[in-house]
Image 1 (cartoon, rainbow, N blue to C red):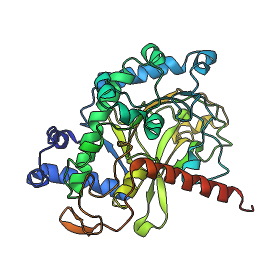
Image 2 (image 1 turned 45 degrees about the horizontal axis):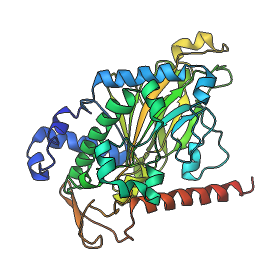
Image 3 (image 1 turned 135 degrees about the horizontal axis):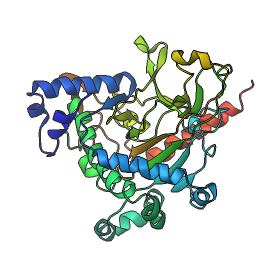
Length: 380
C-alpha cells in the first residue's frame, strides 16, 4: 500500500479526522490500510518517507558487524535482562512469548539498541528515567559499540523510525474515528527497541526439507507496532518472513510469504496495541522460515545449498512506560462510556481495568511464562 499521500497529511498533528476523510484518495488508502491490519495485523507499505540511504546504511552496518569474527561479536554479548547489545544464534526463543513450549531456539543473531535519549530530555526529565521502571526500560546502550559499529543505524535510522511510528499510529487512530493525536503525548519518552537481525545461511538437503525449515517459531510481538526493513529474500535458505492469515470466520488459515518489494517496509500490530484497542486491531502471528527450493530448481534436489544472508531492521514501537492504556489513547473519558467511530460505525469501548504500559507488560510476560510452564508439564 502506498502511503505517500496519506502520511503527508500527518505532518501536523492538528489535522482532523473529518478533514482527512473529505479526500477520496486518503479515505480509500486508509480503508485498505485498516482492512489489512484488521484481517491479520499486517501490512506492507511504500511511500513511507524513510530515506533509502538511511535504510541502506543500516543494512550495510549490520552486514559489517555480523560478518566480523565470532570473538569480536561475543565481546558485545548482552549481559543484562534488558538485552542491549549482541545475542548469538540459538540463545533466544520467541515462541515462549505466546506460551508455546518444546520449540527449538531461534536461528538468528541479533544486536539490540534501546531508547536513544538526547541530553536535553535526560536533563529535564531525570526522575522519569531513574525510577525503578525507568531504569528497566532505559537501560543504557553501549555508546562505544554504537559509535564504532552502528553510527548511522543508532542515530538517523532510529530517529526516522520514531517519526514514522507516530504517523502510523495517527493513521490507525484516524481509522478508528479517535482523535489522531492521541498517542503523541505518550510517545515523547517512548521505550522502543531497535533489533538488528542476521539470518545466516544454512546448509539444506531438500530431500529432507519438503516443508519450510523454521528459523524463528510462530509468535507475536509485545510492541504497539513493529516496523521492519528487510533485505532481498531471493536467498531463501537465509530465511523468509511468513504471516499467518486467518480464514473466514476465524476458521483455518494459511501462511503467506512476504515478498521482497524494493523500498518497502513491513508493519505489524503487536500484543500491546491489540489489548489497548480492545482487539480492534489483532496482533500478527508470524514466523521466519527457510523455504524449500523453488520449482525451477528441482534438478538440484538432493544437493545441499548455502545461499546468501538475510538482514532485517526491526523497530519495536512502545509508548512511555507510564502511559495509561485507555481507549482512545490519552483520553479523559471513562472507558465504559467512551465510544469510537470506526469509519462511520459506532463501536462501544468495553469496560476493563485501566493500567499503565509498564504494568501491562509485566502482567503480559508473566501470563506467557505461566502458560509456558503449564504447557511444558502436559503429558505427551
